[in-house]
Image 1 (spheres, rainbow over the protein chains, first blue to last red):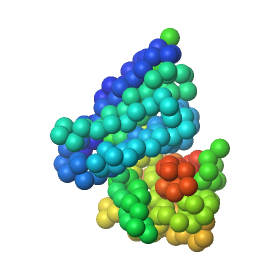
Image 2: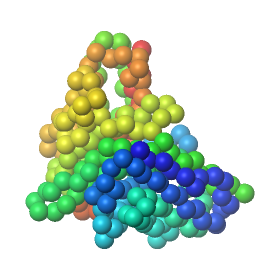
Image 3: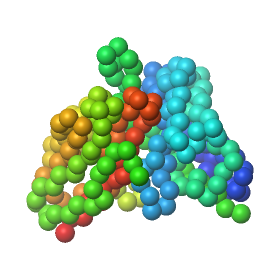
Length: 124
Length: 110
């Protein structure tokens, strides 16, 4: 189970911090990611973090403004985004990431469980 | 504009078969595994296909996946009205170190 929290209305220029609490699996063995969907738009990848937290990557829309982190002792993944604009409005989903070993390199290859999403509205 | 290209919409009658394409490049589809997701209105995305052509046990065998070169295809046979949804392909791009989602395809069952 994945449950997002921390959504709501945020002023432009402000920050958000979303949490995704998980249960029912060995959290530290899986990567986690955030994906968002703006109103009327498609899915947009936001960020991903490796199982041990040693690697993280970001989509262009949040690069330099966003930070994904995890607390393996609490089985929770977080997303912080600063300098919010109206373009950050949308539903934010966390998802569990499965990995594959491709030519000796561990790569993400599918996302098998998703939370129900947290709505973030950036508005004054 | 997404790096993975999907048709914006497809439609077919109940009982028929439809295919949705996903076109990429050598650094993503040509190298790594494609997955497909269904997003029903008002719900979270659901995994339909992984590893190019494998189905989770709870997904009906009406759904299938294939890949050739730098393109992937989702097939849905025996269409039902409950299949009306948005469908997305996704993959890891090794050059960009990014997860890519296609722009999504809206399926209408006429």
